[in-house]
Image 1 (cartoon, each protein chain N blue to C red):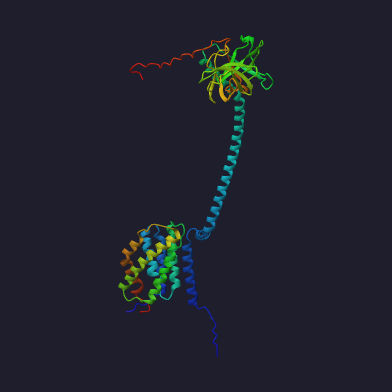
Image 2 (image 1 turned 90 degrees about the horizontal axis):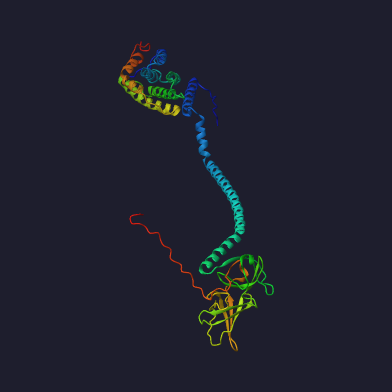
Length: 295
Length: 162
């Protein structure tokens, strides 16, 4: 087998054609590239990099969102701390104001009671309590300087407290109604049966001298009868807690309505008040009359 | 009757004159467009000699765009000129001229196609641009310059004809 080998050479026509092709292609490429040749490569690179750019954008957005969340969380924590501090300050302030508010509330209630009883009542503040001790009582901040005398009745809006036991120059001692040596003339609100209240301690008292024939119900209100000339008739004393039959009389145990352990201010009745006082006549407030034609 | 190829020297002289006119007609764009089209489509193409036609066409395109000084990136017109010089030269070898009518018809088709390709190439190279009215004047004056080129190149006295 004979292999014909010919030496390859460029002819003049071939060189011319190559030059033509190069010129034509060069011009074409030059024209296609345009004024900014790099923009084509940038476009291709941008197309190829679009997915990664999307991922990068999402990553950046996620980081920005997380940074914003962290910042808002820090701001929230700071605000929370500030609010906690402010709340503590307000609680401290409220705790500081609480006694004053309670005193003001008590004063308002005493004022209401004073308006309901048409007597010359005097107010005093309880400065000390010796009730846990034997024959203990309540110490008031006023005494003879206010014209107080023993056996003046003492009451609060919830009910009677007791009577003045001893009066000093600037202080007075209250004998509470639940003291064993205290006695108050009372009556039951339904049966109108009268008796004498004697203290049992711890806010309880016993009504004596109530006949076995009387019908007393548990929960029945007990009022002052006014017969002791210490309290006028009709002041609330307490409510019946127990009723038991005795040999000659009923054994009626009463829960006193006045919170003897939590009294800070009291009202003092005048010495030997009348047996019965009428509640004051409170005229209805007159509305300002308007003239016709005026708004 | 088959028309013979014109003398190369005469053709190159006419191309050189047309190229000079392209430069000189720069203040008159419409006339310059006509001269440019004459050089690219009628004078430069030559069957069997693509390199000379391509060189003259490229020179015409660069001269036109260079004197116009409007495009941010030149070369589009030159590329379109080279393409159509090659096409016209190939057509001259593939379908030799047989008369002035066929010559004018071929020139008309080449003018229209060259206009479209030149606009496309310039658009690719330099971006969007106005069409202008050079193509219109070239097509309108085609009978005149086509007949003149025919007379000068193909119908004139030739040493080959004796």
